[in-house]
Image 1 (cartoon, rainbow, N blue to C red):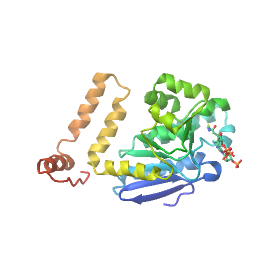
Image 2: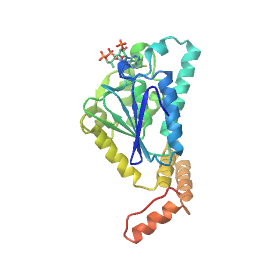
Image 3: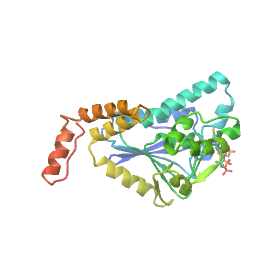
Length: 259
Ligand code: COA
């Protein structure tokens, strides 16, 4: 399906989604959000897609929600906008396949929140992360006040949220906001090699692992263990589990089918 603001390529079961609105530094207007929602809805059931890389065209990853659109809203409109952005990013976070942000430049506001919703983040030396909303008289509204503290701790998150400061790739890596560093030239290869490593694994296990982490994360430990046990148990009787374990015992590479 043709998109106005997304470029989508699928090679070797890895989909690359490039947000392509470079004249506005890939700012997330309502249309971009809708297109992200559509493409991730399709990825969930597309058997040709085993993992997803999200990146931006030009010099930005995403420089935030579209400030021109935000400015036109009253209180009810802002709340609706926040709920919509949150829902789209939660769809990304819950995709039952690994999602990697390849952060090539500015990841500010909604762009930082988009990266946070992805399962992993790789950053080039041009990446800059920040939640500058307070500089606009706003706060992060697409999950940033919740996902950032869960990822880097409350103190570090509040520092970014209250100052609106940007951090570079090295600092983002130091505080655990970024999983891996790359250069502008190697960014896509690094993201791709992580995705390729992941897609070799059993698709049902990947889906269950993502669900176990997401569902258990905010639960008390006992309940979270129960959630893990249920997902672990659900793998019993799957062809992927039979294949993975028998391939190991036969000292051969597994051929997973995702069943
Ligand atoms: N929403 C809408 N438009 C945006 C945008 C956003 N979040 N971020 C950048 N743009 C637009 C600019 O308005 C400009 O458009 P124009 O050429 O039609 O005037 C274009 O993208 C290029 O941005 P510009 O500001 O000229 O680039 P720069 O290199 O001088 O600065 C930034 C880059 C990222 C520092 C700056 O664009 C910025 O601060 N953006 C907003 C970041 C933000 O507050 N995000 C949170 C939003 S809630």
